[in-house]
Length: 262
Image (cartoon, rainbow, N blue to C red; front, side):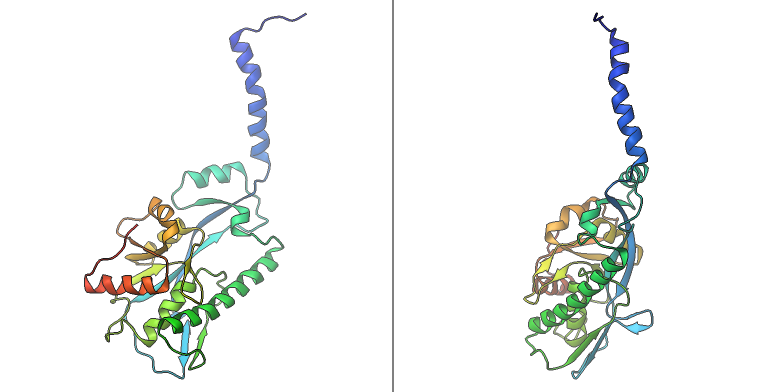
């Protein structure tokens, strides 16, 4: 025999599965990573006491200002992330909740992922040298360029390594610094033909840049919206799609010309 439930009782019964679902979610690990602003490193200077960029076989110039590549720090691929961590990250501007696969796409153990990221950085360094020399129309092999960023992994420093090489060799092309004496930060991968690629964690990287004194941030154009979402006050965003465009934007910034914006 069926009986008709009162509305309050019916709502209470309907809520039970939802409460059970949230209870299960609170106890179960979730496939997310929580990221926060990481270190930045001036590619024109030293990192852990060693020059980041060393050039031999060609005349270099002293530089003023800084070109700071940026990083994020993320929980590891095996970290136990619960719904409380996710909710906390969503409501804080100094945290970002990201799908684990977007940060660790290769899977594997933490050691394997770390080695993969270091290999990516090594490859990125080689490509950054080629991109810089192509931009300056100098022949590869005409000099030796070495890069040392310690245990920082991943390809997202490519753009700034290229800019650092250009500044050390040519500056702004008129005897001045490419930075104009400013602290410039940013991120982006680079290809040998100078194309700038998107990276992850841009909103966290803008905060790291501002924390470490940057007033200008170069961002892959495709990620302008994300960068703007958490942009710290006083940090100017400049979108870039190519190495040549980044160089032109920095020259225009120094000379009072038209500079692109997000």
